[in-house]
Image 1 (cartoon, rainbow, N blue to C red):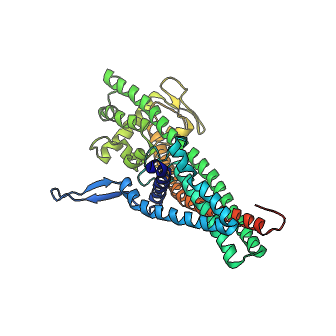
Image 2 (cartoon, rainbow, N blue to C red):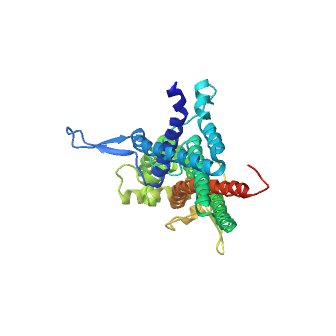
Image 3 (cartoon, rainbow, N blue to C red):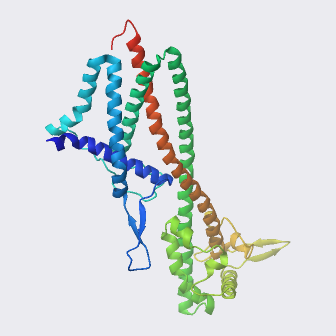
Length: 390
């Protein structure tokens, strides 16, 4: 029976501990990973141990909650003497009584998963609610005791209100920051889609080129072999997550052309062969006086969509960006490198924002203490009033 009574209080502390650990892990102030050496292998074993870390924090949190309860009872006595203590005690034991009677609501105390080093993760809603409730109760009890001990009057309450208003203004800054992060997230997703779709666009052109090579229509030995080898890489780019693309994609146009252990000279030769193929398949006609008529659009010759041809990094074969081509590798590869730089910048911004959001949650927990203090100043003012009874 005693275990049933204590269960909600234990889960309250356990859930709060998980949220504190996840928040600190996201800020880099704590870690749930440790390394062990079993003495047999020269390599260390990585151990993921959030429960172990929570177990270390739990006694501290339980002791803190006991201290908060003592502060609450003391503040209740200051506010309404024995009546206040009785009311406070009834409220405090109510969760235990509900648990004993089977009427305590089912609450998901723990998060569905724990994110290692998860920037922006704060645990479960229940865990954060426990911390906010603890903050409000702490602020309420401490401010009641401060007002009673120092006989703080209206001047103190006015100063406290001014401070609370200033902290509320800081919350508006967080809202503006969230709007900016939302726009960066949208841009990041759009950049990722452009990378995937441009790779798919080039893959279709390369597949057709490979078919022509196999049928003997095209006899460029090096670029034909390239067309066969590069399809796997393009297929990967079509479906890869941004993080994988950032990690394994080359940083030069030549690097993107390379398949397996190809040399720079071979990659450059492939570019020349593909350029000749484009010129033969989609010829431009000189009309004189510097006027050029581009090849008409057809099944083979198409103008590359602008989102796939946003940059020509090396200024080679620039006609590929101006007219219809059969293989838009110059455009697509240059755009992939440009988008990689954009993706890296956007990813860094999002990572930094996610990490700062953990500090923001720590701020909100502190803000809950101020809110509890505001309630305390109002209740103490009502106590001092000669016409208002609590």
